[in-house]
Length: 421
Image: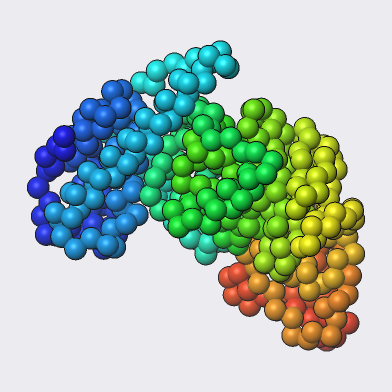
């Protein structure tokens, strides 16, 4: 049954609804043990109950704008505990159900202190609200590629439900899904789940990249300015994802392959890793590369096996085409920490540089935007990328403000004047 919470003063409620982290901390510390006790009555494991409690607090924090009274805050928290406990019970039931098939055992997690859990919660909050301008300011000190190692997460989940951060921080092994895809209805079912209002998403902004480990041990490497969606009940009811932008996904071996939508294409992944790309400007065309193992690409009724190292372009109408080496390098070099352009038009290079470096370069003259550009730069350094662009594109770049620069044809750039002695 719901436990009694510490009194919520009008001042605390106002600060909480207003988004003050100090109010969340006060509310969290005053009620974490009680909420853990409430959750433990449902899941029967203190460590798991702590995970449920932390997720519930974050769930309420995520929806605080809807609150009108302290009583609503209490009610919302109890409801969140119930919802998170159901997710935890289903996960544990699925893991227990499949344990015999995989001969896999798990050591019981050890309960932690409220200080340790608050540190985890703040880690999620700060990662979720990373300011791209602040990240740009610190570019010289921390590379954007290293942000994937330090943050381990670039975006908070969309709404309610099981938080990815718990999976990431605790490395909890997930259960094998109870719902099995089949060749006739899997894509339809997956598309419905991904389009549902409660679908979750991890997102990155310009200049951000990150890595998230899901509950079923699937690893997602999210590219800049990209989104990966997945069902609210992932992975229990369905193993499905959608890449909007660019991401690399590595799925462990399973009787039920992970089904990933890229553009209008579906990729079946089991004991393999691939990188997919489909930005809005790609008009739902999908660029794919298998990084390890073999993946199955499906478009309509057509199937194609893609072995490690192979690339593929799938047009909007489902036509399979070869992906040129130049386009593949341009699309996927970020995986190796580089920005590579070989004979790509300047207009495309500028769009991509804004995406991966969070640097908007505005040309003063559009007459030379079709000029081919060949350049290679590390994602660690915007300065090096600008220098490579100037050399490879025969242009001159001038920084206007933080995150913005202008560009002219080098032939028309004013020559520096020399002083007469």
